Amino acid sequence: MIAIDLQGKLIAFEGIDTSGKSTQARLLVKRLSGSGLDVVSTVEPGGTSIGEAARAIVLSRPGVHSAMLPFSELLLFMISRAQNTHEVILPALQAGKTVVVSRYRMSSEAYQGYGRGIDLDLVRDLNHHATQGLRPHVTFLIDISAETAVNRKTTEHDRIEIETLEFHRRVRQGFLELSALDPNAVVIDGDRDLGEIAEDVARYLQV
Ligand code: TYD
Image (cartoon, rainbow, N blue to C red; front, side):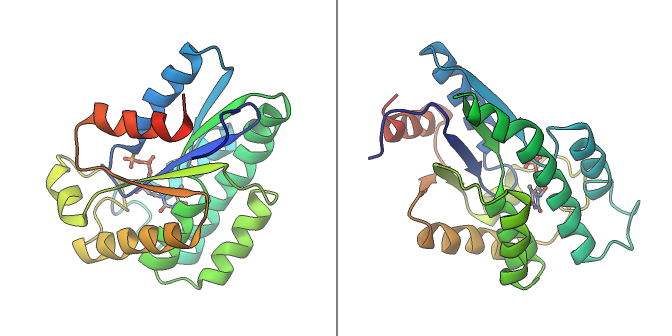
């Protein structure tokens, strides 16, 4: 269990595609706002005009930027994170608000590190600079199997969604290993009813 006071705290949701993390982030924002907290909600990649521009390139339709190197992909996510941290997240935290972010530093370690095979130390170094050293107060990993993710997927829109089952398995394994090493990470079984998952999150935060 963690402290109840969430003012000036960053809460991150992580998970593989279709894990339901964005829905859970939304439900938590609603719950926290309902309890009177001033909450800012943001997403990565995105959240700022520069972040949205990076998102348009990095999550382009398959075939549009087929020459993209894994390293370039990593940098595009970092551009988004650096701007989002500087423009949105840090000012909100400094003003005492609670920030809920859908994806943050762990996504790059899982997708670009474990998924694409980029050296994890490099990903961590870039994360450190992009976040100005900021770490989430809590990271909720909404965990589902790669098979469940593939079965849940109805349409595939972008360069990363079309990746193989094997890729998504590596990413999921990465999330689990990274969470096991992170004392502020909480793994939640995402293969359940939305409401049950939301209750777990709320119980953990004591809200
Ligand atoms: P997201 O916007 O969360 O899409 P969805 O809600 O459909 O899962 O994430 C977009 C994609 O970007 C997703 O496939 C994961 C990927 N991603 C990375 O590979 N590295 C990163 O650092 C981030 C933030 C996202």
